[in-house]
Image (cartoon, rainbow, N blue to C red; front, side):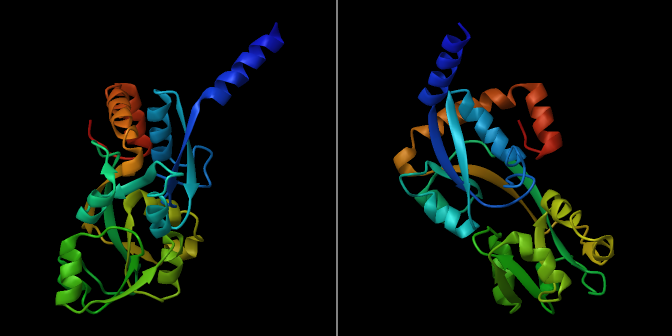
Length: 244
């Protein structure tokens, strides 16, 4: 009898649909080193599971994740802040899955105080390829001729700062905490996070147009998850202050 039960179990697993979604490294939201691959990855997985769909995340640099997510072997890419170009190339899901506060970080010997983007003018600002920054920041970079450099991996941001290859970096509050706690204490004490947020962004799962049938499925399932007070509370405490 037990063999029949096992056979049925494995047949159900094999019968379940599996979809592939591209993503990048941005702990604690998406993290290749965690068993659940990040709290937001788990949210996406839980939502699709309500439709008996399994999700496999494929990690790669963010810019590549965006481009690869358009291909037929993937249903999309997770997760991205909004901009018009992306909205013309992907289907944005209906509800944000993260709400993130991003801050400027610098070394304690750098006399930087952030009141407006004009205060960045004397410094070198590090940006990450494939990530999203507000138009007001881009305008300030152009208007004040702010020196910028670009990094592919966000995991390198703090090291580039500590080695004084740049003066200022931008990290989400929770991501900054994740990266900082992995540093030696002597390096942690060298870091300063400006108290005023650099900007706030909300993240969305993107579905490519050829897989658009998955967007309403995800929207419906996410609504059910967020309607569960215990699930919402757990997600907010572990991951993101997403609004119901």
